[in-house]
Structure formats: C-alpha cells, structure tokens
Length: 132
Image (cartoon, rainbow, N blue to C red):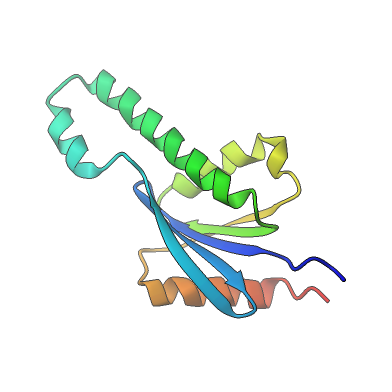
C-alpha cells in the first residue's frame, strides 16, 4: 500500500502566502504572513535605507523558513504567485538536501481570489500528475 502522496499548493508574494493542502479533491487552507509589511516600509524609508534593507531581508528569510517548515512534509508542491518571492523560496529549497526528494514546481500567476487559487491547485494536481 503506497503512502498517500501529499500535495501542497502555495500562492505567495513577498508579504504573505496561502498554503493549500490538497488531498483527494479537498483543499485545506491557511495563511502564513511575512513579518515584514508595507506600512512598515513606508515608515522606515525616511530612515537609513541600509538598516531598512537588512531588516527586510531578515524578515524575508524568516518568512521563507516558515514556508520551508511546512513544505518539508509534502511530496509534491507547486509555488505560484505574482512576484519573484516564489523563485527566491525555490532557490533556498533547492540548495537544501532535505528537499531533494520533493517535486517542486514554479508557475506564474497573478493576484487571485481564494476560489481561483483552489481551482489552480486542483487543476495543477489533477492534470499534471496522474500517478497510477
């Protein structure tokens, strides 16, 4: 009896991610936010850009780590969304051997409603991988 394949869709940009676990046509969703938010950015632009940049990077790394912690429990993952955040996350995972057995795909996508995100994930997993 093969262990069930655990599939995960993540719609993400630089400030938050919608994490969707896909099992047998069902989707469970939760979101993960980056600690870095844009109001924060506006406020700090007046201060030293340099300090700002470091804080931003630090927050982004923490955010990607949170996502990595979730991703490690799945076999197949699709990362999609409008910014390059998904590629940055992908590069971090690619350099970590813990993730070498996980199939991770990147797909471009715009801002989406929750329903559109769910449809995208269902569509991705029902068409691209028909494991027998």
